Image 1 (spheres, rainbow, N blue to C red):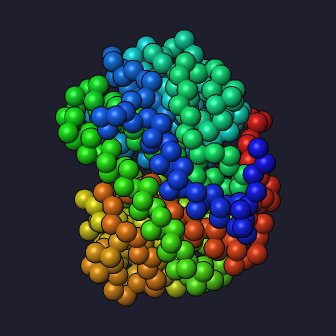
Image 2: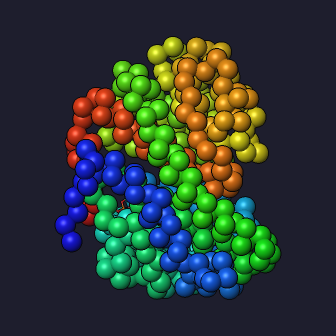
Length: 363
Ligand code: AGP
């Protein structure tokens, strides 16, 4: 079926706005009547998960590593597909290999899948296009139910990938008995409420254009986060580079003092993803190191976080409060909006940025 912009100025804006619906669809596809994850993957005997992807999909894997390890206590290894097979990875018949791809046609990801075949317990494809090459060649396919994604900058596919990977981590936790059924059901409930909170975050779109006007003047922008918000920082920087052509880099906040802090001056905006979580105080102290060097901090947190740490920052974006564990799904929205509105302020081609293809089918 033909997909149009449905009144939005860009496909990217439409796809950002669709996220509450498609994330809910992805959840509905894999939750049973008892409110438990029910994916067709089997973690029995699996002692390691290997996650491989490119670009935005690789950041979804990076977030999922935290979930697999923290919730299911299963070691998770991540790599970008273009490196994975060339490093001759150590694989075992007790590993589950997971390939994440919106298109299912990314050449590097497909080649990585072919590399592991026969060497691991199960090859799982987490894809948006269930008829794709990656889907066809996997043992098990988990469609992410995002619907057609047209914008070159991936948005709704990312949050749907995160949703399916979150459920996989919960299913692994069940198989391994790391948490009990009541805790798993509570986590599933938490995931369900994220879809609703995304609506609130999207309704807050009018907070971005003014900030984006300023970001559009910058030559370099840094993104910071700790724990699973670090991959979110990576995703925010990628999105901004892709569509606004502004140089952006992301760091785990604690790494700042090991080098990148030398970049900070009054002209460098620093975007900090800091939902109140176990690492909040540490993130805030890293943020204060930036402010002490006159960096322009944009703090993205909830009302509590902003009340606690927002004094003296250049700007804030207020998010609804969310279960810390699922914050990466919700905070994808500000990462996307910051890139989107900055690109709009610069007047770039948001849906078809220069030099990029929606799906990279060459190595
Ligand atoms: C993200 O905005 C990208 N344009 C790009 O990084 C993309 O995520 C990557 O090429 C992987 O594509 P895939 O998910 O279709 O495999």
